[in-house]
Image 1: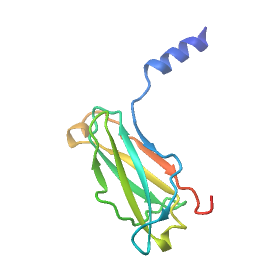
Image 2 (image 1 turned 90 degrees about the vertical axis):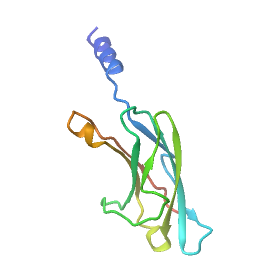
Image 3 (image 1 turned 180 degrees about the vertical axis):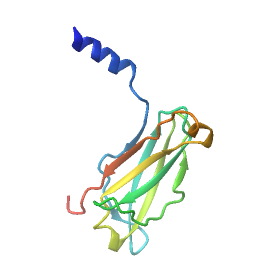
Image 4 (image 1 turned 90 degrees about the horizontal axis):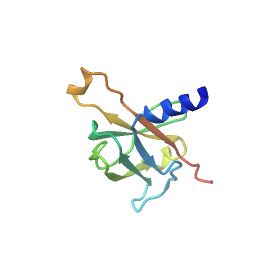
Length: 127
């Protein structure tokens, strides 16, 4: 009985976050010489969030420089946006994680609000 009560509590109090696909993005050569690229798609399931920040990191969580149209992207509620990311050829070996983080408005920071972060692990070039 306790198991069913806990399951009911978990189902009714689940947090709504955002989603990012693919789970394992793969870098491929870009049409621009010296760059590799990948794309991620963000789906916004949060009414209280309109913007998401994209970041790329090494296995030790050190930031990696990359190029994209915008690093902070507007994603309306229940919408998806696909973002192309470009990395230098010398960085393609150290890119381990690509993350998206919800950006809260200043008005939400005074209230209790939770920022969500989702990371995808980049597949190796030989996988």
